[in-house]
Image (cartoon, rainbow, N blue to C red; front, side, top):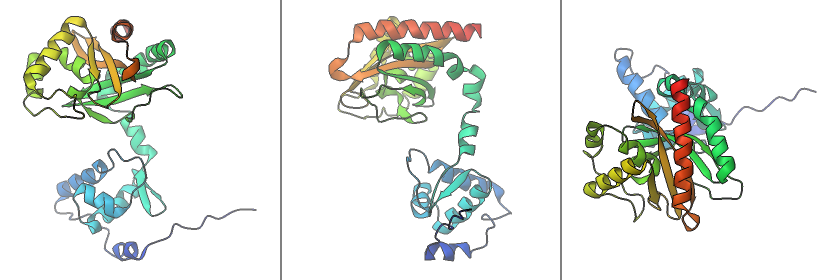
Length: 273
């Protein structure tokens, strides 16, 4: 027996929107259309569930009718997919994300992953791999124990660099120009312990440069602490690996030595790749 799935219900407001011609804004100004489509894709950032047209339009700063037309075009191109009356990014966007040139060319994830697994097996704590993008750390990989400390962040999430051990250690092994550019904008605050004073933050970077690791204690998430070491190429950080534990169980000295050793192995493996 063949089972036929019932089509997703169409809400009255969606039916009204569907009657609007599907030409995306104006053929005379395709650049505007592309920009708005990108705004709509950006609106999915940080969402962990399918969302409706109204919320996406609000997050993208677009009229609901425009958002609906763009979503229809993106669905046709397999960049988003319907879940009932809501939308989510498709596996096609995941495929594109995995092809990001910055990550693929340096092969950071592929080379680092076996070492991250060994680090996780050794510590049974949260292990993360990150890369700097502007003023943020983007999480590239994450391993976490069952029943152990959990972090509220996932692969692909962005975190303010000054609040994370990953960001601090990458900035510590960046050029003076890059550090100056970073300090050109106000430092973000995630908790009461976040370092937001530029002078104090530079001191943190100097310490990290000397020790080869950076530490944050409840600066990004209350109750969680991390230590990170850089993955280097030509003396500059192209990534970093960290260990995160509950702050009450944080053993800075032991974890620092462990993560430093692993980051050194990854750096050597990348150089040999």
